[in-house]
Image (cartoon, rainbow, N blue to C red):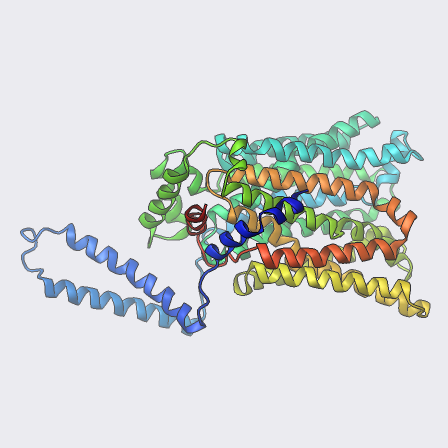
Length: 536
C-alpha cells in the first residue's frame, strides 16, 4: 500500500528529491568548499573578537592590525590542513565514538535475542512440554515480533519526553526482565511472557539507536558511525550462535544463554549513564546551555554557536510539539511514506526467508549443524557491515542502497539458475551456497544499514521520532507476514519461484532508491530539513 501511495506522489517527491540533491561538484571544488567553510568559521570568531574589543580599551589595535590577524588566521588554517593531509589523520569522530558504541550495545542485544532461539528451540519445547506442537513453537518465536511492533509504536512519546539517553536506559529494563523470565521459565506461559518483554524492549531500541546516532554523530562521519547498528546486530547473532554450540550436548544449556543476555543489558544501563544526551533534543526542550556543553564535548569548540543557531532555527520553524497527525501533511508525509516503503521493500526482498532457508542450503553440502550454518551467515553479514562502514561516507547512501539491491537480485537469480537448470548436484549446491552468501553480503552493504539510517536523516526534528516509529512498525508487520507465509509459498510454488519473487522485489527496490532516495552524505540534519521545508 505504501508503494502505491508513493507512485501517486511521483512528481511531488521528485521535486523534493531535486531540492535535496546537492549540486554536482568535482573533488577539487568540494575540497575548496570545505576549506572556505573552515576559513569563514575562523574569521567569524576573529571578527567577533574584534567587535568585542572597543577601540578605547585597546587603542593600539588598528584596522590594519585586524587585517594582519585575519591573514594569520587564514595561514593557520591552511597549515592545519597541510598537516592533516600529510599525516592522513582525522580524529574528529573519536570524541563521540564511546557514546555511539555504548548505544549500539542495544543492537547487540537485538542480534543476540534473534540467534538465541535458533538452536535450542527443540530443547526448550521438550522441557516446557510443547514438543511436536508447531503452533506453540511458532508462537514462542513470533510473539517477539508482535511485541516489538508495539514497542516501535510506543517509542515516540517516550523519547520526546525523556530524551534518547533516559529512554534507552528505561527501555533496557524489560529486556533484562524478559531474559531473566525466559531463563527461569518452567511453563510455556512464563516463556511467552519473557519473550514478550524482550520484544517490547527490542521494538523501542531498534528505533531509538539509529535516531540517537544520527543526532549525536558529526556530519562527516554520521554514516560510518550509524553502521554500528548493523555491526552490533551481527556481533549479537554471532555471539549467541557461538554460545549455542554446547546446547547440542547439554539440553539445559538454553537457560544459561538467557542468563547471559542479562549481562549486556546491565552494561547498557550503566554505560548510558556516562553517555551524552542528544544536543538536538536538548535544544528542542530549551536546555541550550546543556546543548552547548555536549556539542563542545563531541563535536569540538570550533562551531558551537553556529550549530546551536542552526538547530534553534529549525526548532523555531517547525515547532517543538508534534502529533501523529503531522505525518499527514508535507513534508512529513513524504518522508513517512518513503520510510515505510523502504522497510516494506526490504522485507519483501526476502532477507528473512533467505536466512531461514540458508540452513537447509548448507545441509545439502554436508554442513548439518544449523548453528554452524547460521554462524557462516552471521560472519558474512558482519563482513559486509564492515565494508559498508568504510564506504558509506565516501560513496554515499544512495549508491550503496542501489548497488546493494542489484547485488541481492543477481544473487537470487543465481540461486534460481542453480535450482532450475540441469546441473550436476555438486555444481548446483556450490552455486546455491555462493548465491546465498553473496545475497547476505550485498544486503549488509546497503539494504541492511542504510534503510534504518537514512530515515532519521530525512526526517524533521519535529516528527523524527514518529516517522521512525511508523517506519519500523511497517518493518515488523512485513517481517511477521514474510515469516508466516514463506514456507507455505515454498510448499505451493517451490523455492525457485519464491526466490524469483524476491529477486523481482530487489530490482523494484533498486528502482525505488534510484528515483526517490536523495543523497544525505556530508549534509547536516538541519541543512536537509531546511531544504525540505522550502519545497513543502
